[in-house]
Image 1: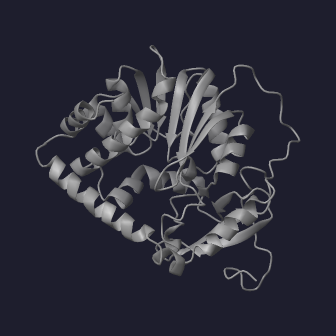
Image 2 (image 1 turned 120 degrees about the vertical axis):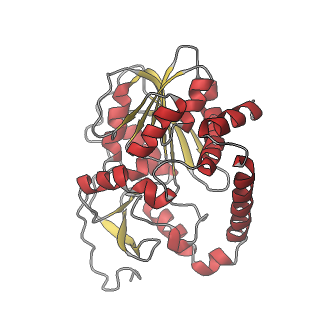
Length: 333
């Protein structure tokens, strides 16, 4: 008997699995990280995890367009400390893709935020376009960094086919109501042989306390196995998988084949054992186990040091671009 399903009855699946199409599910949790009702389920066939039921797509997109940045950043536009923090991350992201870049390439950053990663790309000499659903952050990127950032959703915009050499999707896929469809659209926007770099949280990570694992902003949760299989279902070749130190996020490089793959009709996307693997990891990551480990205390100290460094670093600056240019100048290589 599962603690989140005390009657041991089969849970109702209202949203078929986005990877394998299955409707045979288990319940992983019934509360979000704020202890509010939120049912999170796992596919027994492939181990994909998602929120079910959930609000209509229109309500979800309205949340991201108008409330998400305000709720998670407490601001309608980036503050200087956010610029400092996100520029450091953007520089690290650039290092991940740098070896793939050639002169004349055109990049697209989906979920561009305030434009920090596109600005790094632009300053490194490459053409770059951004897409961001939040009007305040997209406007900030256009005005502060003079970037080409469109305000909108991946589900609604339509770029020309074969437009980009490399597309980045950093902590975006988990927010989408149909990740497979999004990946399929992205594949069409890439030139044959072009790359997609995806990073998402890892359902197997024990970085956060167990009660903080699920929240309504993340509609899906992946592990390396089912993320790779989802990319393959969308027509990509997975060329590299890295697990980010500390957070254990999944960073995956996918490539659009130069020759169209044959139809995968009738192919099974089940992953035997993946459901059991994920459920076992989640079950073993108890509150006691978490707080008896070193992770939460090291994380707390690192966060405090990071916040202190940010406050000290930005005192000399008035504008976000000044912060960005300073970091690019002093973090070369």
